[in-house]
Length: 201
Image 1 (cartoon, helix red, strand yellow):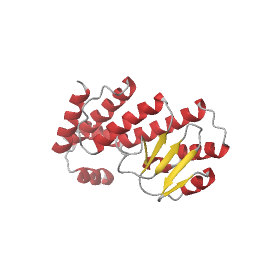
Image 2 (cartoon, rainbow, N blue to C red):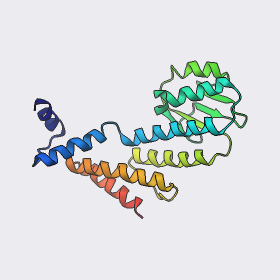
Image 3 (cartoon, one colour):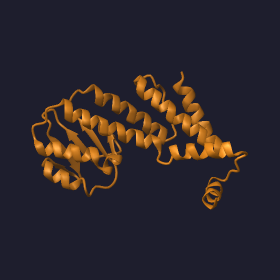
Image 4 (cartoon, one colour):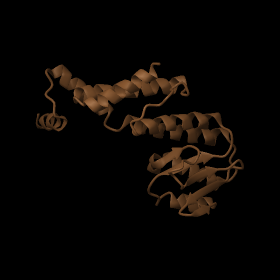
């Protein structure tokens, strides 16, 4: 009961019934970690798994780096896209499956050095592949949508998303609308409502 009282004070609402309280707790648990971040990290991991499985990478050190990146929390700080203008550090995988790590005005090519640096890096980085791969293009489009949402901008067009990504994003935004309603957050409610209307167009 004490924990529940603290919880209610923290969200600054008074549920009208036990049912609404339980519903609020359920939604809050679902939203404990930002689902947009959780979702994109899962997509990045999925792409790296796909890359390792469907492409023959001969250098075992490169495989080690990609496996490390796939399973390490540093993946949260990587954007999978063509190097963005605002991020000048990151990893490029070349056509010949070599790694180039643009790091502090240097280009590091030794996979073992990159492996050790990934344990130390802070800040935001990009991950880019310099060859045609439709799965990467899909992920890059999702990354762009996510960036717009984080900046509270409305994407012009959601038709670039595949059906699975469209459905998942609709689910995430619906949860955010529900939380905004429960917390009486008009700003969030207005933004995410406009966003889901754009999704339905």
